Image: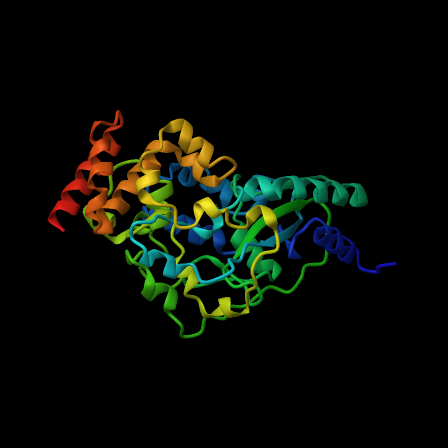
Length: 345
């Protein structure tokens, strides 16, 4: 019989496919809410207005649920089989972020979290709530408090055993569990993640200006981009992995064993000529169950056209020209830019 009730939960989490399960206090004070407020006040959240409207509830777990006492923080490894950055050398192919090459992690994790939460509620008799990056809860500070890793200079969670490749899920419980030791910061003097950023999105270590981040621009931003970001995006058409992939801590990471988050062949270096021809139905079919689908066909085609403009491949001019008559104004603008850039090149 296991003496520590946390060990039973950890065993259940492992059986459900989670790679890490640790515990943190959900009620003790922290400085993460203050840092988030400064981020929003500086306007660095860009057009993500939901961050401002939910700021008070994001400030602390108990601001969203005053009954929260413990956070059970789960990690699922999604490590790639190899360094993905060399893929961008093929400028006639698009680059999709590693996390988005398999099934949507929200759907992969959510059901398992609910199962585990139900088991915790049955054992403790206390209420639980489940979170997977869709509610006003700051998962990364909770993960650091629980000891899964630390927020690196690129502001993402970084693990000594899984590198930069962990999906997070959180179960808040009204039950009290002994917390695990928190993780300290182990970046040292390294600035690889800051130096590699193609748009200089980090004003300082441990600070991000989302308005300059290619992940924000390709996914969250709806309009036409400023010129400097169009050229800087290269072949990145959904997300950006540069600051994650260059981190030296990845040498300790292993490829994910979870089949549903492993890369689909069609989403690794897809040809830009094929992608730009997608209509809405074909887009939805290609990205079925993928997080890419949520940005919609028009925003995706805009990204593809920027990549075409950067490809240097004159053979893609006809493909871009066909989008000059697209019903969407942002797509038309991107098509004009791509054609003119290729002709100048």
